[in-house]
Length: 369
Image (cartoon, rainbow, N blue to C red):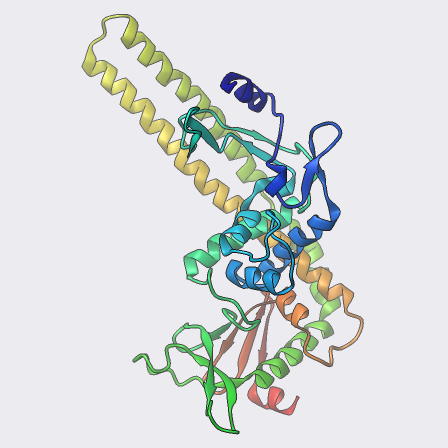
């Protein structure tokens, strides 16, 4: 049975635990087939994450909306959301044999850490999420974890407002909570932690008015921005050089692994000078490890360029869809276009959009807006 299962993996035959896998069912050809009613939820999860919401915030939202989990339960857990966000099957690919059964009697399984072969099958079934969007989400997950923002982002402004003095994030605070003058403000989280930040607190209205002023300025330069990107987009995000180096290193890795196997086999079958054997073996291992490390670096660089291209494309698409000036704050527009906002002591705000366009909004502009 084990041999048969692994033969299916080697042949690239994909099967899913359909009873608890959101978005797919077994098709007539025994390959995954999209269930559109469930695929809507999968796309919503990806969209909410790219809007800036954390897995815990997304889980709370889905629970509140009464959307059933993959297992048909009412309450969503953050790790379920994270699993959906990181599963390559949603982009139409499949990594097979992620885990394996250690003992067939106890059914004990273990995460595959190289004990048995894994197989990656590209374009194995219909995709629910576009590959570029999936790759962007993986990039965003790594970035947020590195910056310590992975479990926050329950509010549109969470993780988006940055102190221009110390670089800390702005957080929401309630002033006069037990009085009729109760008010919600945003201020630097480091303000009272000894860093001496002199940046001002802001109301939600302040941030919204400044955003409208910044985005409408971008709209005014829309034609110029889009023309500029038509010329430089490919150059900014081209991965051809990385793809070529990746292929070369993969080939080198296969060759060196063959040499490692050969020297081990030779040492087992005939008498060899052990010092010479160790020298060759260690030399091949060092070459293989150097290639592996560089491949990982290339993967990160490649993912970063693809993420940049996708972010810019999404921003330009949003820009093109707006016909006139924006008169009211739109939460989806905020999520789709703003990367972050820096606040300075003189109350000016500098908006950095997803395409890295920056717009400075002095205090007199957003106060008068």
